[in-house]
Length: 147
Image 1 (tube, helix red, strand yellow):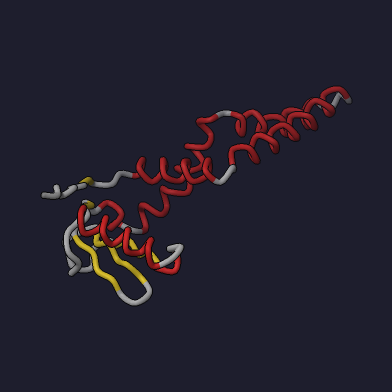
Image 2 (cartoon, rainbow, N blue to C red):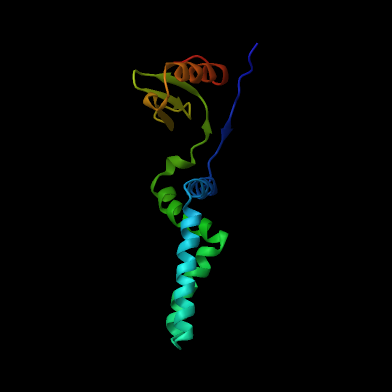
């Protein structure tokens, strides 16, 4: 007998902020930010040595912000806030409600509501038919039979 996995939650803006931060970290953006911060700090120190302290402050301040881990969440919040306000459906309760398949995509319903949120997974993303069969088996086991 297989158990059904039920996931159900109501999204919050913080969920999306965390997702943006996680994706940025996965893509190496934090390293790019730190390199940029290091370059800005170096330019700031050179300006300070040259006696141009206002330039040093203006250049070094963003460098310090880039180095702070909390700045990533602030940046992500600035991205998410307008998106959250523009799309009230982002706050709809989420549950893995069902799934279906066409010739080129698999659609996972994230709500039982008509027109509710969904996740589209392109079948071309699979390495081959065996992977698609494995994915279908997971969907059947965890969500149920396709609609």
